[in-house]
Image (cartoon, rainbow, N blue to C red; front, side):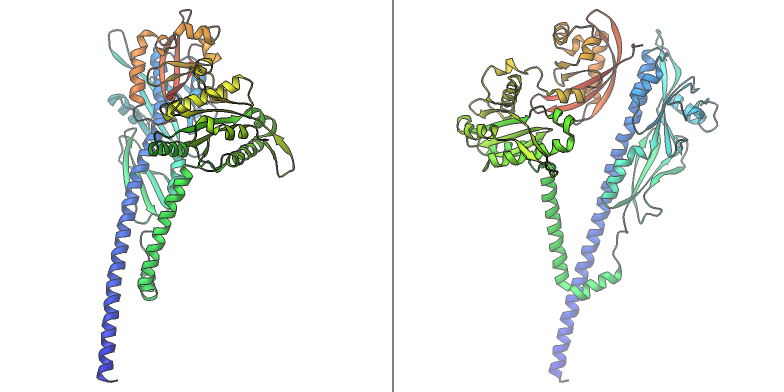
Length: 581
């Protein structure tokens, strides 16, 4: 080989080696960065899920606090324990117990839990932990231990103290809940695994021990796990998280990718990662705004789209339509939910055909739909609306059976009849309700004064009320505590003849329900406990009511925070009458 050729070969080799080194360094740095990001993400995930676990535990703790309220309210006497415990039971609770003087005397359910009737204070294992809880006046946890019914349990013990007329406190006993572990965390564990993580949850076996015991784990061995801790029941809980399969890739795979792919592989992987991330973002965004049954926008997507349109063209005329299927509950009851689902999908397709173009068609919940028509006044949109109302709502199933249903529609426009999206929605809702009052299967435009004739005070479908208020209960505004509705059971509980009689007796205010001595305390507790809560969260409260006839009744109430598009944040309150025999 000539000198010239040797120089070319040497230069080529140097360039190749240089490029290979540069690529190797770049790939190695990228790998280390990805590794560090994966570790950081896992650490953040562990911290997030420990927060979820703390909230899960609070559910069990709040149950014992509710039982404590019953004991204190009864001055140490617990009547109808089984009834109270049955109402407090949750799927993740194995049993509920009370232990006056530290001796377990009542357990619900008793069957299969007879061995739990023990003297806690003189038990060699439980006694020191029970004494710790009394001495420090704190709720303690102990476990996990095997349950007779199978699985593991965690004992939550809440020491109860009574205060006499002189202000002296004395120990009464314990309110106890046995939590099923890991069932109480099952949803969180499934979520962790779906994100590609193995996990191990451990806890100190009691507040007076540093010994850790594994509650549950998804794998026998975790590869380089990260961990996060939290405190619950005076115990330290530790969550360890590791990515399935480990954090690193093999050296052979790295060498192969360098030799075989070089820069092409790097560009391809980078491009693929960008595509996957972008696709996932789009998919998640679409899923968050789409109703899975009909493929239409859901309530969240509808609100975001409408707000964007109104912000872009604040002075442009728009018309909004609300509609639902008449007697949809009867359709489900008579023909089954599968046929009901087919009716919903059929109506969605008909609406898309009837309102083509820029109209926003959405399913806002249940059998309720909305249509938002930008750029048209109510007069301009009426031909489309009436044509949609007159459509033949008939469909045939795969089995060849044909079904027919009818719809009711209400509509209004902006800015002629409303100054905001919320006001427009209230107007449209009232127009729809007025159709219902007029016999259903119709279409009406909102007119001033219609609110007074329809549901200015109510604003809810009967099915929503029945679903949200089992037993005795009422609904009130979260801000001014104005009562919007009370069901028949609560009206009778308040010694009233009907809802009208109830409204006259209470003047429509929660203040006139609750005993004057309890009102300020209850209001302070609900503000404190609902701080930071979100739609669907709930708390338990204890108070007395003064009925129309002057009777005083002791209540345990469960208040659930719900958001209503028309009326804002509301409390759905169900009550348990502790004085009922």
